[in-house]
Image (tube, rainbow, N blue to C red; front, top):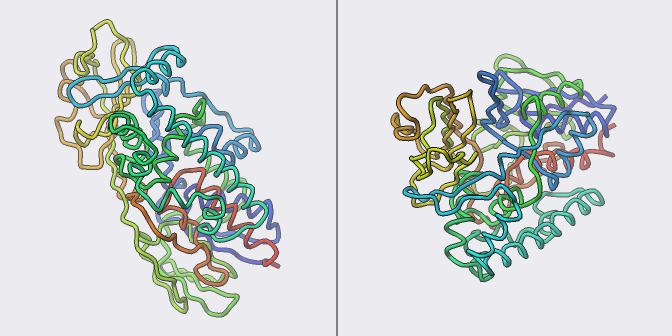
Length: 426
């Protein structure tokens, strides 16, 4: 029986373990996780009867692998109706507010942005076809992630900035500033000059039918996948070094624990993993900087006047922001009781103490405060992705991340790695 070590218990590492059990039954998987929990950048917090997704917030029908996993494991999902109840704020006023009927919202967007919206939808349709081809190619011939993206034609996106792609396609600057940038900010806490594939993934995520999360919280997905895979999970054990002892053997060191494995799968960004490699000639690639994200949730009596709304007006569930509004990338508003509301803000910069001044009537209470030191890459155009195969029998799931990062791409990379190993593991 072949032994496989997986470094990282995020969605990628847990999905790999799940797919390994399914397609590589003659293997034994051990997952090492530096933190004391499973989930990585998927994190659900529960407070006073409300759920807060501090990491990956939703999935939709275009996320084929995530949807398949949810269905196969009979997990309960809920539709996020509030995603269609949004507004866009420029720091001084709301420049757009959705209608209760999505069709009316589309009409209003079309009236305001005209051909920019139509041209963007054409680009989204093209990208969806390319993603469909990516799934077909990966199933037919698993390969390096970079090669698969190139075969599907998706490399034309990540090698350029998203703003350049859109402007070249005839999308107006107003649409870029008032629609595209707010969407990039709410998904990745970055602006419209984000890398092209990450930017397109943001738009597909928002403009692709209904969105969902798990009833028990999205954190339940990686936890369930790890459990159902029967992998040995070692929490609070950071991998310090990986030593290649032969063509078919690796020594993994975590603190004082040393174990031997036939294969190793790294499912955490090497830029922040602090892993020493011995006997491995790592290929060269440009390190990717990672984005800090700060989130804070407070409870109090919401003040509609802060966004220029009448007292009687129902507040939007999500307020997206333009680049001119400052560092706050979004405001998420949900009822906490008959009079109180929870308001969550996200920012790439440390959140100041008076961030909620004016958002609430009177005092408010901070109930959640979370800091991601490396939420996802700071997406910029990249000429070449890191390799999936770092060395023989040493695979890297995060090779896709400089171009795009999501639960779906992590699961896709995990399945591709399992397919690469299938036929090799005896």
